[in-house]
Length: 117
Image (cartoon, one colour):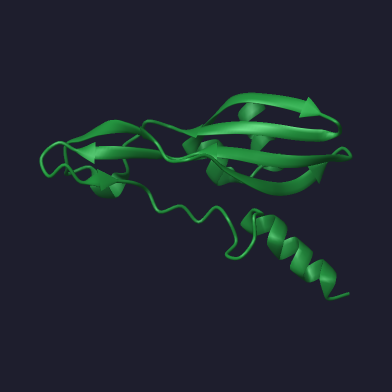
């Protein structure tokens, strides 16, 4: 595995590094924006179907742990596929955002523990 991927797995949720591609990044006013797109890999649970890539869902933006004094926002575009036979839209069910927040699961858990002190 590449050194850069190993380092990114230490900083970002591993799910993002494994299943998404970083397409761009920018730093503005002490805020780091990382833009991800889901890889074109067909979901394993749907391998039995004939699927074609069918664009992306609307981008979501979630907050993650700050890095080096910068706020971090992850901009994520999830892919969808079209079943050629049934014309049904297929997508993965990602658990990226903690319910009721706009933060990653790990960051929300960290803040929850922190608020108990």
